[in-house]
Image 1 (tube, rainbow, N blue to C red):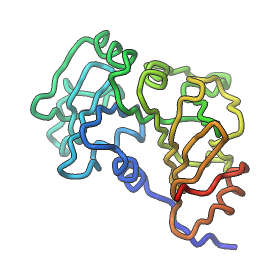
Image 2: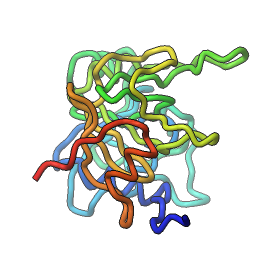
Image 3: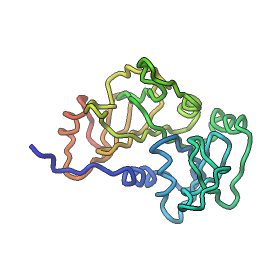
Length: 218
């Protein structure tokens, strides 16, 4: 049977994440897909973006041709700096992360468990390059940790699992998972649906993920 739903594009997914970031939040956007969130923050909403290499007050990606490669984020991508933005030593940046000064961090992941365990730094496969960076500090230090990722691997397996099989980054730290098919809350009792793309039911999602999913809160 041909699916009747459309997956969110990367930009649509970034816009969905941006929609939930509250006014005045201090937010770290992790390497990869999360960096796109900066381009979709609602107009008129003040969000202070942090980068672990020592920037506070980043703006959207620069226009083509106006990149400054002395102004980059932790993923070595050119960024812009908003009025009032600042640079500082990365030790100070990590003090912000570890000290609970970030309201939200948005990270990519290889796996997330239904109760919010996070695995995002290594698949443990031979030849894989471990790349933990500041992920452990962010996952535990931020007041809320959100994950942004495709729901399925290239092989069609769910990245949301009952129990992570990859090396862990943090335990029970993920509050929300934003994917190309649906948004989930991770709770002590397992997954809860927040929303799904049009045409995709909760029952169908349970079949895709292979885990029970509680209905969205009223």
